[in-house]
Image 1 (cartoon, rainbow, N blue to C red):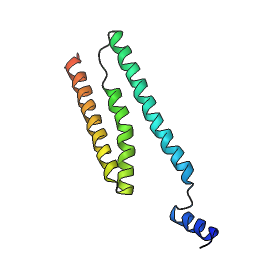
Image 2: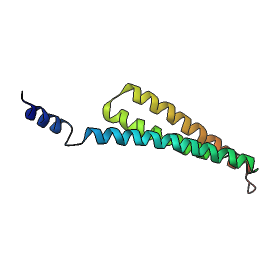
Image 3: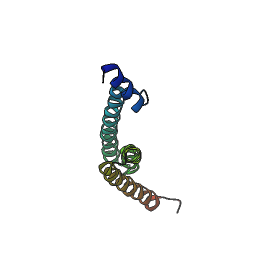
Image 4: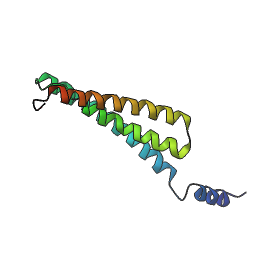
Length: 111
């Protein structure tokens, strides 16, 4: 096989998508998730320090980002590893959502 035929087959296989661009996009998403987690932690600590209580909702949102990414990847690639990681992040997102809702209900002045 010549080089041009191999490249053409690769393009067809990858639907004319640039694999390097896809890899960079994935790395950017991972870095964005880490930055979101750091920012949520800063907001969480600051909110406690100023006496406004806890806000687990930020962590629920932060954990939902990689949960969604890994879930979509697991579905598209049938990757067991990505499915397991997605489940872990989904459990964390649900856990922090429940904590946040519980905190809102127990501290509400309306009820």
